[in-house]
Amino acid sequence: MDTLPLYAASFAAGICAALGLGGGTVLILFLTAVGGYSRQAAQGINLVFFIPCALTALAAYRKEHLFQPKKLLPALLFGTVGAILGALFGLTAEQALMRRAFGAFLVAMGMVTLSRCQQKSERTSYFGGNQDNPAK
Amino acid sequence: MRKDKLSAAGFLSGAVNGLFGAGGGNIAVLMLEREGADPKTAHASALALTLVFSIVSIFIYTAKGALDPVNAAKLLPFGAMGAFVGTRLMKRIDPMMLVRLFACVMIYFGIRMMTN
Image (spheres, rainbow over the protein chains, first blue to last red):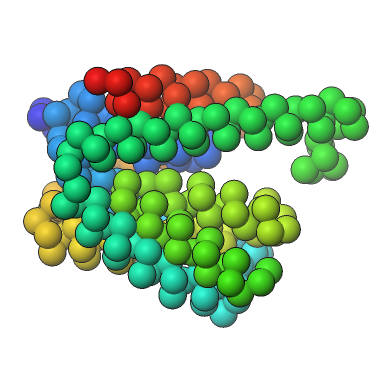
């Protein structure tokens, strides 16, 4: 793949990430659909891509004391086991099966996102203001 | 939040993140919010969890030869520039409309992946 479209995809993914639109999904979709990357390679690139974005955001969240690492310990331990199993399975499973599974995951997440948007806008119109941030 | 539910949320989020290389954060946010966490705390906690799961997954992807982290890192400056532009754009556009649009794009590509 030419490097220019790859850089453009990274740039677009960065915009989407900042807007809270799931930059990772954009990057994986672009790399597989347009860039001709294998699903595993695209997913791996996305994982690397995520690290600095998360570190930057977490630095801000930490100042606001929005998460407490000690309280998250059980989730971290079990999640690490889950991540190892998930990665090992994802890398060895049949490509076609994983492609369909990822498709199903995208559909499910898209539906959940739409439903949450709907709930949010119903709440806002019912109360006549933004209930998540009443100051607005 | 109960420890067993927190563990389950972590496991599912980690498994999805390892499996698809993305999406673990979405699962964690959903599950944490369902257990009563406020949206901001849920997002921050999900981000912290996904950071760890992503690092673990990167090691496995690299060990299995599916990833060249050095090459992938070359894309980071472009992502950072995009993020900078995104934060500027955020002040000018309706985020809800964008989220809806993006959800539709996800569903479209999801159906294409399932059927092709």
